Amino acid sequence: MPNTQEFEVVIIGGGPAGAATALTLARADRQILLVDKSDGSVFKVGEGLPPNAKPLLRDLGVMERFNRDRHLPSYGNVSAWGTPTLHSTDFIFNPHGHGWHLDRLRFDQMLREAASKAGTEVREETRMVKFVQVNGGGWQLTLEEKGKQAQVYCQWLVDCTGRASRVARNLGVKKSSEDQLLGFVTLFRIPDTALQSDRDSMTLIESTSQGWWYTALLPSERRVVVYFTDTDLETSKLARSVEGYTSLLDQTQHIYARLATYGYTLEGTPKVASANSSRLETFVGDDWLAVGDAALSFDPLSSQGITTALYSGLKAGEALQAHLSGDSDPLALYGENLSTIYDSYLHNRTVFYSYERRWLQSKFWQRRRLGN
Ligand SMILES: Cc1cc2nc3c(=O)[nH]c(=O)nc-3n(C[C@H](O)[C@H](O)[C@H](O)COP(=O)(O)OP(=O)(O)OC[C@H]3O[C@@H](n4cnc5c(N)ncnc54)[C@H](O)[C@@H]3O)c2cc1C
Image (tube, rainbow, N blue to C red; front, side, top):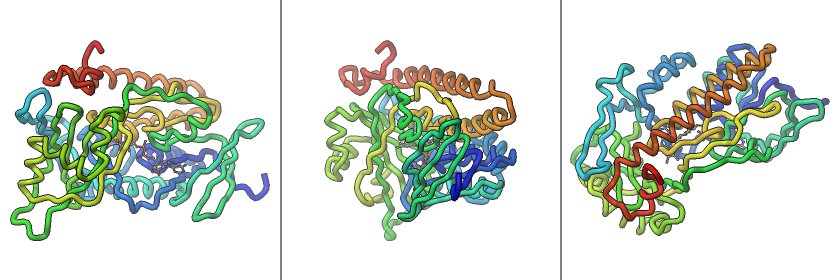
């Protein structure tokens, strides 16, 4: 194919899943291209990294670099869930120690840099706009960087495009959802004139009649505050405007108090993010596979998104490396592994939501309770 660059594997999406897949394959000396459309300047939600991420960061060989980046240590969660009073779940007894609140852009960038150092060609601010399967195997992709289009060819295409699942969906693979959860994401800042600074890096969670909230202190000393509710509920319409969002926030007890104590003020307007539980009907097909959120996505209550993205990236990389070396079984096992993770996640999700029994008539809680 003249004038077309060739790679063994092209990975679309440079979040944790894409970077972990690229890192694993590049270390096995495969020719990899990692493509991401973002320019790394827009705030990215998803900052809570639990302690069990540590072995994954070690396996990926990025622990030292991660420690140098000085993400904010987090020592657990405090939640008013099922009761109006706060209960804490401390990481103090966790064998891996504390977790972190990440500077998410720095974290994703660090992983892409590690992939690049291992030999991956990384193209940022580059969007995959089109792909076609070539007769006889492989793919031809059209990539766009700053308005300029280029063609590349690869044997394998890896979908790491996050919840959009761009590759798999374009191939007609169905994605099934358990719910219609949306997150309304805001940032709060302490005014320079504040008398005390906020040092509380526990994640605070509070359930309300039509959804739930969390807030986490970020390394930038801002607080991310997110309200979760279902798309079809009135609260979802309300949460889109600053006035509506603030009126819902005023109805919380602990989240409101945390922000008021330090005089936090809202920056900007609520940004809407899909937060439902969903999975592709299949994770592996002819010359393609899906990894991370593109394959299966979780309710953020689980705090499992980033670790699963890293884990599935590592496992996808190992399985594809084995496949390219002539052993096809690991790819099927990779798919089975993801199905098992999703089933066990769904079970835990139902159990956890069932702890909340204060709003028996609320649609939001009825939909999630055990037996419904
Ligand atoms: C409100 C909210 C709060 C969350 N909080 C947490 C939390 O506290 N802890 C946690 O573990 N998880 C959390 N998550 C989930 C977590 O953020 C995701 O699970 C994680 O980011 C998945 O990583 P990924 O690499 O699969 O996808 P992503 O991080 O979404 O990366 C996908 C990448 O693909 C790129 N891309 C997409 N389409 C194209 C294209 N056509 N061409 C090129 N590039 C493309 C995007 O630019 C993006 O960088 C939260 C999610 C939400 C919505």
